[in-house]
Length: 107
Image 1 (spheres, helix red, strand yellow):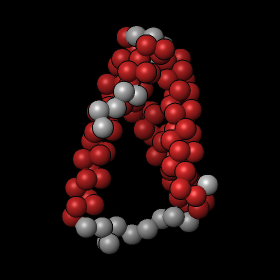
Image 2: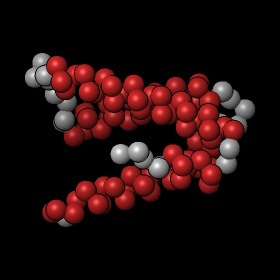
Image 3: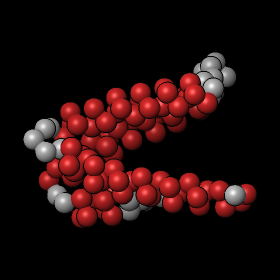
């Protein structure tokens, strides 16, 4: 992969994101979007615990700097807000409408 490894992972992300929109829209039928985001978070947490355990990538947080902690917390808060807004948008709109707008990054 070399210097284009980022492209592979970016395309994989886009592919999984498209599945996310379809699966989330189907899963939101008849339940609150905020609670659905909570369930999604629990599933992601469990998947990450299994992945980190399987790959042996657990590490201590003692080596984290204040900058690491601050920006990881801010990133987590931004992700949570993004997921809540995304699930609400999916509940109110159609996945083919919501997904492209969600991927329109301001970065």
